[in-house]
Length: 62
Image: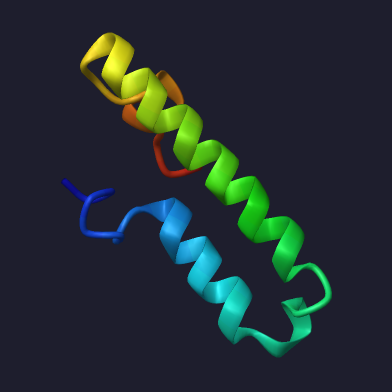
């Protein structure tokens, strides 16, 4: 649901890349990488019916 509402980590990173002036030189690369990750994530959900392990098992660093 978060992905459908574009509030997921992928869309947030793309938004930051668009808004932070220091990232403008890298913005296209960052956004493409996030689109690729989002596509892989979506494909995984369609195949397995759940989030990728890197998403579902993620924890805040200690």
